[in-house]
Amino acid sequence: MLALALAAVSPAAMAGESSRFAFAVIGDAFGPSSAGDAAGQKLIDAISRDPSVTFVVYNGNLKSASEPCSDALYARRETLLGTSRPALIFVPGQHDWVTCSTAGPGGYDPGERLDQLRQTIFSDPSSLGQNPLPLTRESEVPRFRPYRENVRWQLDGTVFVALNVPDGNNHYLNAGGRNGEFEDRVIANGFWLEHAAEYAKRRNARAIVIFVEGNPWGAERRERADRFAWLRFAHRPRDGYIEFRKSLAKLAQTFHGPVLIVHEDDAKLARGFEIDQPLRNEKGATITNVTRIAVALRDPATQWLHVDADMGRRPPLRLAVRDVPKYLPPLPPTQPQPPRDGESPALPDMPEISSMPDVTEIPATPPSSPPAPQYQTVPGGSAPTTSGPLPAVPPGAGAVYRN
Image (cartoon, rainbow, N blue to C red; front, side, top):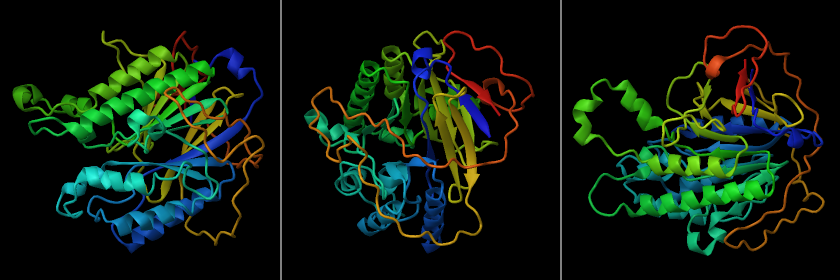
């Protein structure tokens, strides 16, 4: 068990009535066979049994790299995701559209496949799942009507954002000419982050949590690992995440509260995830109110990242990797929950700066009872660890970690 303290949460925000909720993060859960469908279904069933989980974020890749990018496969996986008892928000990943141009998945046009996802999985104003959440989609802004996959929702004072930022260098193409899809999406993503910052600031939100599939710092890590990169300076691919990091830095300047970015990672991480603060400003200084969680589960088909949030507790967020039990009895059928008091299933029209009804009431559910964790201080969020109390948090620090 690892606990993450968002030290930048203001005392005024913490002084309010305590509400607790949890969410799960999964991705790459389906393998290239019928057995992969069964494993993914079992993972969703296992998460559905946790009464504390309010929503699930499927953070990219509803298909493997070798599976066809066919309409039939998309429809089958959408049906599987829809069986989730909690609301499920799907974030498009690299294998969902970027790699569809290769021979194995069928040689499709990536832009056409992305449009197909927008017209199917992203066509509804709410999330997937048996108890869906209302979402505000960027497509409600006339200028960005195609970008239905970029969404925002709010829960108990925390603003959540999901963006189409895939792995594979953000679909930046090195060929000559205008990089149309990439350039247009960069503008749309930048607007949606700017909009989220203003939205959170005006509503005195506690925090902003951002989900993307690609690793915005992946190119930097690969360059550091390559001792001879300087010899190939003229041939290095252009970093496709530069604009996203700049937009993220701008968001952190507008919204001074804690900002958490969650993305998938292809590195081997001992805990299944890594927590650090890699975002820098133009002068190279760390932007201390931005913390990232890189998720690299050992077996994405049988594990999920469980995030427990309680804004009346210090630390307010706790993270743990959970495993699917070997045996799961069948789930009894349930009826979808009706809208909460004051909550309308229909979304209002959204102007250039939009609003969405606050979702502040969390269903009363019995919390799970895991074994009492042994807490340890984790300097910088990396092993090895040493036992002891948490150190004092310097002003402006974005996160303190306990393991």
